[in-house]
Length: 380
Image (cartoon, rainbow, N blue to C red):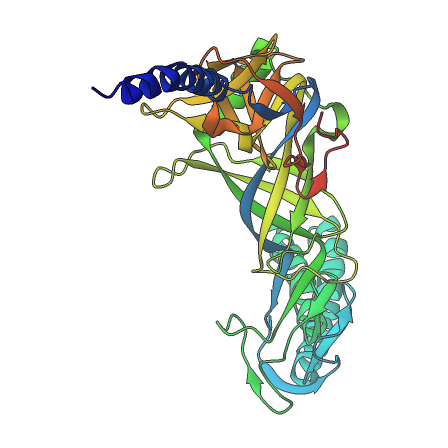
């Protein structure tokens, strides 16, 4: 009978038990989870000037179509197309000879009527004429005065003057053309470009919301600068000179539900031309304690509600937010985040509600709050 095999088994069993015990200890050590690290941004409440970007179109400050007020042959054009002209500067000369002759005839008739009226006045005192004859002579005198005045105006109208100061466009007629009083075609157009208007449309719902915010004290007016407007041109460049909001229409366009606002901009270099599309930024007011949260920190749940992860004493908690609008690359928060809260912008995928985490300053935050200008607050 062989006793060597059981003896070997007895010797191996304690060693196997020791190895199994050692393997069990290693598995426990591997299963111990490490505390995840997330990048956080510390929210800071501060005053914020709220602006609204609205599409707009430029329109001329004044436009005057030059038309003849008498009929005649055009003798001369006295301006350079595209040049600047002053108010009452002569632009065209119409042949004045016919109108000068009419003026001379009217002046002669006036002299005759005046002499007759004065003679009848002397005769009336001696009862040599009737009162009716005297009255007719006085009326003829006044009528002759009016005819002289009309003839003199017609002579003046042979000099076609600029009705406003501005830039004159191309001439629609040349020397030798026959022009008529009241013709539908203008001779030229004078456009005043400095200053210039910018018309924008703002939804009435947005305007009503602003009024409610101002009435409730949530927004404060920005003082004398509350009507300031800035422009971004169609190529993306910023117009260097600010404008002033002049007025808003008193009626709402029923087809769009918007109100037209008009702003006035200085235009000394004629950079803005009528008909250009621009982007206008209107100052609405100042929110004293605005809460801005980077867009990286905000996500939406299955219901479409905005949420963010907030770290409280090293514990991650999910909060629902009220997002009012975007400001640059951040969200303006109405509720859900308070001043000093730490919101997670890096490592959101690994978080669970109530999870212990360690924090580090976020490296993916560069807040922009005013149309391309970086915020002075660094990522905390």
